[in-house]
Amino acid sequence: MRKFKVLAVLATLAVATTTTPAAADTLRLLTWGSYAPENVIEMFKNETGIEVEVTFSNNEEMISKLRATGGGGFDLAQPSHDRIHAAQLEYNIYRPMDLSKIDTSAYDPSLLAAVKANTTIDGEVYSVPHFWGTSGLVVNKAKAPDLESFADLCDPQYEGRVSMRLKRTILIGMGYAMGEDPFGAYGDIAEYERIINAAAEKLIACKANVKTYWTGGDDLSNLLRSGEIVASDAWDGTAFKLNTENPDINFRPPSHGAMGWIDTFTLPRKSKAEEAAYQWINFVMRPDIAKMMSSHSGYVTAHKDGGDLTSDQLKASFSDAFSNDDVANIKWFANIPPGLEDIEGKVLERIKAAQ
Image (cartoon, rainbow, N blue to C red; front, side):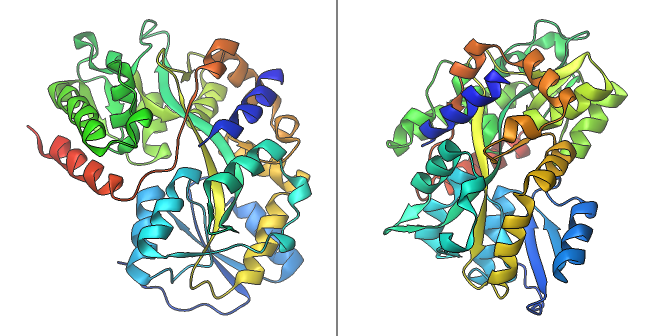
């Protein structure tokens, strides 16, 4: 429990699809795969009369969908805290939030302050937090006891036995594993390109180790359950859920540091159901609902009592994975400068195309 509180405090350091317009009694939610449980949607509908239409996505796809429509097609989105500032400056896809319509007293103050700091533009706040966690490694410690770094995913002994997700996290994680400081290079585009290109060469050289590239948490979980792979990069919540099934599988913070993120609530610029969006935000941040959602997702909510609203199993999995030193070594995602993701996209395509 103490580790959960420490991690929350550390968060203060965090620096083309068209959809048919929905009626005001329908909330069109653009979110991550585990953030909208059916039972919670049903409870919300019973209490408010509002339907919830869910589109599951990820950071890159959220930005792409909203960019294609100028911020249309959805009423509430859930990008990570570092993916909002630049996207808004470049594409104008979000609108400011009216914090008077949100019960901010329900939030962990440090998490709320961190997200507000990251997403304030011209004095307007664009997001509030929902879930937080880290990205690092998921490892079957019975089969890969010494795998401790992103670089270890390329160890020849694991040929054909690991997986990766071809997104920016694998570039950054490999950069840190190579002794670089990717986040520290955000202010120097040429230096950042040098780092991720070096990481790309490492990832291309070890493609023989990769059984397959995973795209979603369910894909990754099934690969580990079946024993097809022994390790991968992963979100900690995915690993914690697997740990409830198999104690040999759990999250492993890399020796060079796990990467910390906070997923948010953010209003698309052309939201047609803003009031429904605020109702959803307040509903899912109620203690009883927050606990249900934490149990479903495997992550800790940004509620002020988030650590207490997790299951005993999640607490045990976290304690097994993280030491105090691991917590202190977390690298928090900082705001992405405009244009950086376009550069990363080209590098990732090069990895994908390499033979």
